[in-house]
Length: 615
Image (cartoon, rainbow, N blue to C red; front, side, top):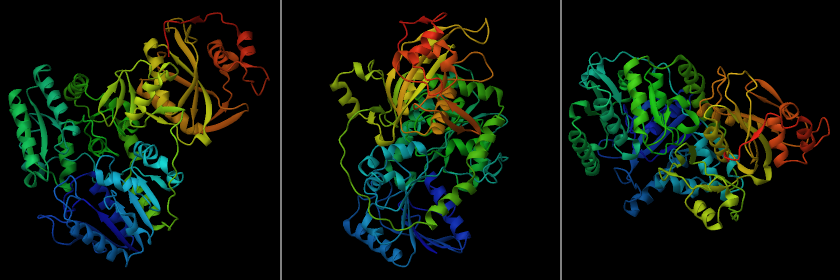
């Protein structure tokens, strides 16, 4: 099969401008190694003008004259855009399928006569946004559930069949390459001594949203509060430094800030690292920082660092919020917590815990990724155009997928700020003006797939910092659906021993389109985020799915079968009483009694209404 590919970003033989280009190379090489003829057309620039091959079946042709360096590649004379359309069309005329990597080619008519697979690798850059909103491809590959949810609740809400064309494929790593590697050649480039220095890595582009300012603040605390004078922070000079006066000025400003803090000896600015040296570079560090607010679509750095044996501290933003182990995350802007974690890592130097390494290898194999891409690309069929349908914005509402609940408030990925509005999680108490403002500012979105929604009743319990955690646990539910009802909060004695702290309990009715097994996984994730350990009697938050209909149901999650209605409805007053408060007329499908009658039979002995705690 002849496969034509497009890359807005320039490509190089031995180095990559970013993670998206690494993934493109992996996918293209896999297809070429299978015997397919692959041609990638990309943007040219002064240091990338000549065609080259990554494989005998894989030709890279730097041909387009889009503006360089980034951003705004379409800020170029109109004849350059026409030439790009012509050149791409000429290539497509002799190809069997089109793969548009990162969606930079925004004109859907170019691929209207050929099966087309689009992969959107950004939710920031304007050309990718335009490509998403103009999408008429036959398949859409997105690298994370976070990115898929963002697109579904924005461009996707105008196209009823949008979701049917979406494939979520996580980025994958070649663990034969990305593994703990003894630093050798890298030490000829970077003047650091691992035996004498505690090495902190900042392997990102020179953009404030990537977290460089937070990294400087953490280094300041490590040196001046924790007394670690031997810290060395490695900061790469981006590949575009010689092409952009703005980038050069950015580095000048950084160096001035660092010098003013008295940290000049603690920072080392070095050349951009080639792909083949990245395992050595990442293995050189004692800890890698990814503390920015930048909204990644996947974010390769933490995964590559962990694979090379170097622990990671990442901001709790974007897809990191949903995918990385919670133990690696700190809230955005909390440099004190980041410094505390970094100091502990730099003191102990114990590397990556075995359970995290096992999780990484189980879930992010490059072979799985490229096979999934090949499956979509090679089997793409021409489909009818997507039909636009205007829909009014109506309740119910939920938190936007680019928002996350934290103890500091609701964090907004795109605004990089926290919202502390008191009525945010009680829309019945909010004014219409408040709700309209939250919709306009992107904190709330209408629940999608209203026709497939069901109401699921959940019990919540906490006996560790219970007054705070049960509220946080309730608020997190707004990330996965709309709240139809919530009970009062009740206190009960712990059932697992005299010495255990008492519990706070409540029941919530959640409107959601998630299947029960998916919902169970999301609830487990929330438990992990709040620190749940199943080996301890202390429980920050515990969720149980009580029922989702008026009949018995079984579902499978993580190899275990669960039966609904939950047995605790008949056995635990701390479940039955709050359930009867919000669904008194629900009838248990096995015993034929209402929730109200069940609660009355169990009684309320040992339960105390906690009017001082409001969900």
